[in-house]
Length: 492
Image 1 (cartoon, helix red, strand yellow):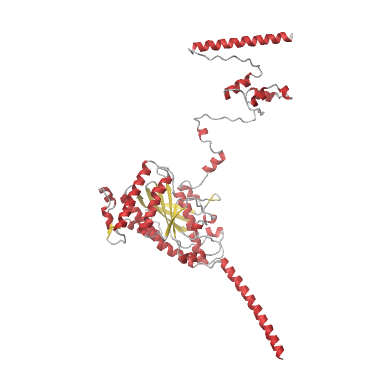
Image 2 (tube, helix red, strand yellow; image 1 turned 90 degrees about the vertical axis):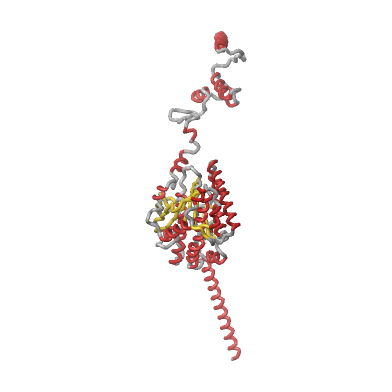
């Protein structure tokens, strides 16, 4: 009887397969398919049909070894799978046990914004969103506080106002020979009103070379703006060329240096502001620093033990070079604000200068982190800062009003690089800042450095040598006394 039932099941399966094949052929004929590649219908056991269908749909071919192993009878493998595992394997899903409390993954569609923005995990995304100093308003929650004020604000330290006046005057005091170079009348209008200098210290060949470089920078600006080039192109083709031209035109190329600060951080935590109990650190693109002479370098090296550097960073390039001008670049139409980065970096520099002045005044042996942030009021120079957004250069002046407040005021002047006449004004403004750094800032710095206490380590060495010399002198005195006594006794 069982054999007859088995034969009946086989016959029914064959008839069912023939019926399905006939229906498929009829459907293809109705769809006007001219040629159909017929394949033999393979009879599959009912317990294995779902596995084969799932495998051929996902892989488009023969089932994998793992799928074939899972589809074999469990008795042949020496164990009986549980109903849960058998059900999971039969549906072509993961063999792991799942219940109502097990969360299931739901993959979004291709056009889903979740799929497109799921590069970062939720923790990383939230930490990125909490990153401080994205806007100017975020700086008000810092300690020390960084405030921004317009150039029209009446509040400005005298030295900041004096620097602003010097820069504005320099842009309208140009060599007379430059008057004939702007080709277009519109360019000449940009240079008026101008006080043309008869004596300026530049030869005619230098002026011709200067104007050639100005035209090159104007063309580079046009290319970067037209082709919407990235920030690196603006930096290499426009900003660096302008800074080099200013250094050479001012004649201070051997006394000052343009420092690339893109990978340099403030590595002294006590100089950084605090937000929500955490130190905030930012980088900037470029800075202008002093090149110390041999005499100045020796004086700086004798600055007290524990400082290790006179700038915001301990990198060898900046240990003996103080930064007096900062610059941050952003791409045109990028919608990014360069002031927060400038604010944090400049605050660290002003705090460092304040520490130098405080130690020169008080002569303390060691400064703690808290005392650096709550130091007594000492006079420090202002720091000019530049923001470069595409072809727009804006000058700000940072001033330390107190140990708890730093004010960045501006823009006190704005320049552009899309025309030769505007570039001439910008270069002369930069030259005046370079001259200010080489005179006013350098004089203040070297005065403060010269008033520093002697190096603590050298003092320890000197004290050790003095103690050793005293011990040797005492031993020699004792030996001389013993020799004198022996001589006296021998005479007697």
